[in-house]
Image (cartoon, rainbow, N blue to C red):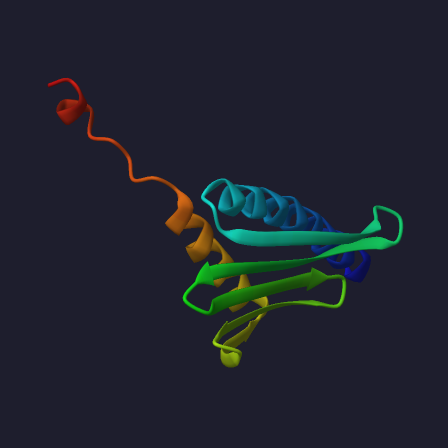
Length: 111
């Protein structure tokens, strides 16, 4: 059972790393400063460090590795929020959702 759980966690980490890369690219396309550094490989495990400057001194950092997952949000160099695990992933999802353009109402677009 533990081997299966470890493999599942490695899969989650790999998916998060891929998502972080895409999120950094999306933020950069919107003109925001964002980076995603990836370390490791499939055999040794993988991890990533994602940092984004959301403007007005507002920064977020998301770290993911075989050792854990964390989200740190700060403003003007002062840490505001630090989350771990599922809560950190939830905040990452919130940030990603804020980048997605609102759906266009089809009825309005026909006029």
